[in-house]
Image (cartoon, rainbow, N blue to C red; front, side, top):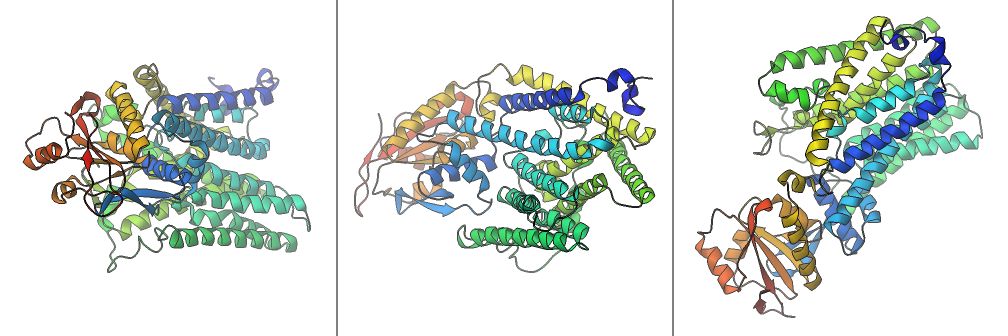
Length: 573
């Protein structure tokens, strides 16, 4: 029988192998593979951009904030506190950045943060699997980590804060498992330390993503339910719950009184009237499918080679069936033994965590109308439509399938079903890994969009211009075209964007400090008379074409005066 070790007791030759050593080697190999992927496919998203900009402003003494320019004085930037995201990522990035900030420094910091996130997540799962060792095959950690080292899903949907938030939450669950593996002992310093670590780590996930607010309370609540009848245990669990409530309350207070609003609590929910947008659920992402076959195969499906709905329904149904059957098997084992075992409590925590996250996405999607945006396929975006919001749930689903596969108590048909699904994910990942290695692996480290353009010469030129401009004063960007890459470059250096219409309408330009205004112009359109007049008035040099960025770039340099009259305008020749 092929793969006999997965479906029946292992032969003696396998049992005699030094699995503790092989498991450790598999762990570090998985870390190495994930590091290689992060290095090759570093993605700088809008979330990265704004939170990195707030980190740059933090190390410059402006707090976790975003720079804003005002027409009354273009050279004196104002700093609005960052309210849309919690401050954790900005604090973390601020520890890694130093002046002068450059593209390469930001990329290195971004890569290090992702790698540390991988180590955090894998480390938490290493200790979790150690607690489940008696009920799993001896080679379970090797299979588990090699799968997550190779698989592209759901890691292709994990962005700047996802790895850290889920890794911190897993670390909190790990300490919960430590506590549940022992009986509570009055006055035990070690157990008290674990309680504090459990609540603190579960809360720390909230510093990265607001979605973990409700999950921060789940580990102490599980501990309270398990230890309710034991006096010392009840006291420790209640203390952990109080600590979680205090920490979450402190973060909400910080967001309200320092950042300006407790986003999703005091600002996002304040809308006139109350409506339920049931139609948004029609946009529901097939996350069970995307957790198995994202990219590679799905590109063929969406391209018309295979019927999309048939594939989506089949794969999603198989994943759901595996989860339901696995849950039923675990329930029957627990019922037969007459007590809840450690593995059942852990599986229950993961299922509850996935349901809480899923419920939150559904609630937000029902509460608010879909955003009408041109960057989203179909033009309508809501929370349940975005695959990346399901990334933590997909990680939990992958972990559950692996545990069912490697459990000594799972029936043969369940192991076969899990093996097929995980094999599909692995083959799909290997195909994508080969493609990305050829496409990006031989290029030097750069912003993702630079790699996509196939050249970095223009972006190096841009970095040189921005560095020199930053030494002379404030840096602004205005544009009459889509210039996302330039916007990223300016904002992450603590600069700001300003409306071109405002520049054209508010004449003369005023500043009390030196300021360089970069004008990113559409190469296909130079017919705006007002823009031509502006460039001539402030003696802007001829625009330089940057093909990779698809813009013509020129600058206006204003020297500034200490008081009210219009600034004397000069341009770098």
